Amino acid sequence: DFVADQGGAAVGRTWSQFLSTGTGSSQPQGFALCTTGKTAASATAITADEIIDLQHSVISPYRANAAWAMKDSTLAAVRKLKDGNSAYLWQPSIQLGAPDTLLGAPVYTDTNMAAIATGNTTIVYGDFGKGYIARVAGGVQIDSTNAAKFSTDLISVRFIVRGGGVIADTSALRKLVQA
Image 1 (cartoon, one colour):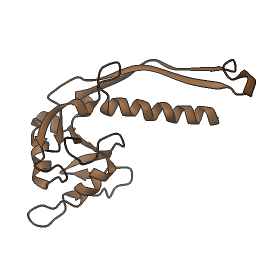
Image 2: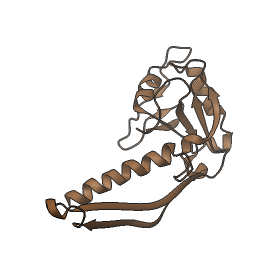
Image 3: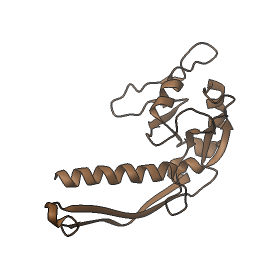
């Protein structure tokens, strides 16, 4: 059980990283490679107006099922943003199991997204269901051997996952890039 738990967690972390920020060259294309919807004026801050501009850079049919993805530290900065009436843009969920919302769309944190800094993609917004496809080809392969570490009585275990990810609809997702 321990090996399965540790191996599964490691595969999940690596797979998640590729689906978020993968280059598309010998690895999945991450959703953070989507089209830029807004470039922030600052390298170290995000404004409420930039969040609104990013949301409206996605055409309306895709906003109906859209969501936000960002690093937790970016979310902390966004939660402090206020509109012109000093009301927070952030709306915590009052229903158990329902995600918090920002401008009416659910917000999900992703540890693989970049932090707020020069040139980084800090937020992705859009309809991930229509805009991004991820697949696993053939399941997870698990191999073990004691041959490599025979003299030390250790067993090596490896987990192999084949799959891919691609931006399927370039109109469905947009990103915010820091200046």
